[in-house]
Image (cartoon, rainbow, N blue to C red; front, side):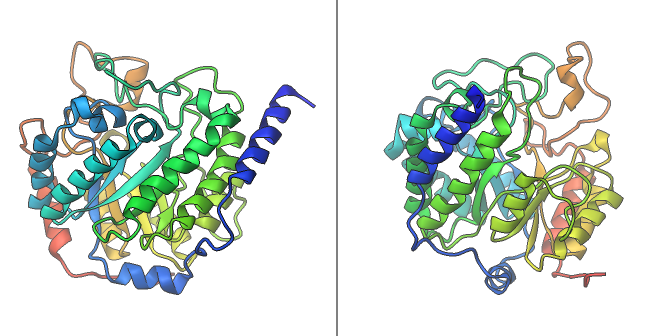
Length: 378
């Protein structure tokens, strides 16, 4: 038995011991999920971090909390018809100051509700830096896309079984505090859990640990009895349809999610194909990441397809700021320090609040205010 096998089995045993009670609510039936979705408007929004924050920690920590900017930026969203935002939380914020963190979430919800926006909160994330550290965050690396984003939990904590009860406390604490709050759209439990984040080295063995923990996170989330759906979105490979050869992680995500969520940064033909695959599950489908202009994923190409199929559409990026996600992914290999890219990769607005492309914001507004239309499965 290898050292990794011992670690994995030890982790699984501790997590199982901390699993949810038997009375935790069941996964929603398709009828329950579709009933919930029928009450929503056509959902359109962005993955949201204020321009003043490089990552989740800088957004939410007390020293850098910026409600005035958040209010102004969500007003921009309301102005173009957006009604949701996908917003990342972090386990270390809970461990640092649970009461303060809850107060700031409450303040965020108050601001969002004022602008008629229901957030989808993300609890964990396997992307980018595996070593998050509380406190002041480093400045953006010049010319580099998302140069300060951090994973949750960090890899050291993921490999330490003694920390798993703290992750349960975070999940049940946050969801439990807002489980009956109808200002919240839902809970996205883990962003891209099988993302290797291979810009950073030394992450061997991460995926099995994440998969074992995610199974428990679904249980912990349901133990809080939320009125909102819980989900985790699939994001790579070519075929997610029922009966396809899914990975163990994809199978877990699709079998446990109340509503189906996915990411797609490809051309419109690929986007529509993914929608048709996922519609076969008979549950609401939400696209929680899309729109990378230089990669073929655009508002012009994908947003009308989402509208026709009544698929929620949440693009990556909103106001250009410290995340620098106007820059493309390849900036990690060739930073844009001398010249700006010819085409912005993500983002909807300049830092001063003017649209990057007025035609895009006009399209978002027009589709958001149009009546729902649904294309039957083919």
